[in-house]
Length: 83
Image (tube, rainbow, N blue to C red; front, top):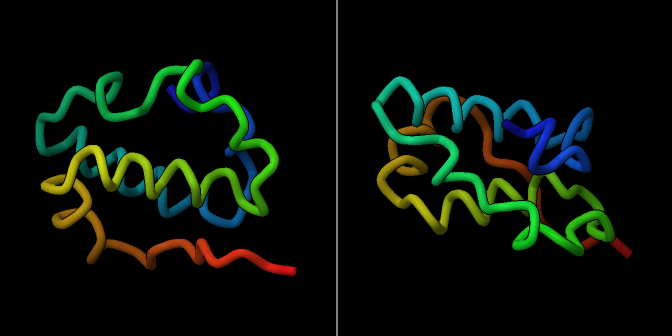
């Protein structure tokens, strides 16, 4: 899913947290293609310090139930802007 919709998030610091959250959501029965924003909605995240952290937050806001139950499984990514 990430490879086709958000290749900019691969191999970045927040990718493991994002992957854990999506895997846990899938285990809970959530439809992952609906959890991850479509390619059009993700335009522009490549310019962020960590696009994976941006996507994590977007998925987290889309699916509060998923993120609430997935967060304890791993650390949340650092989404603070760096100079």
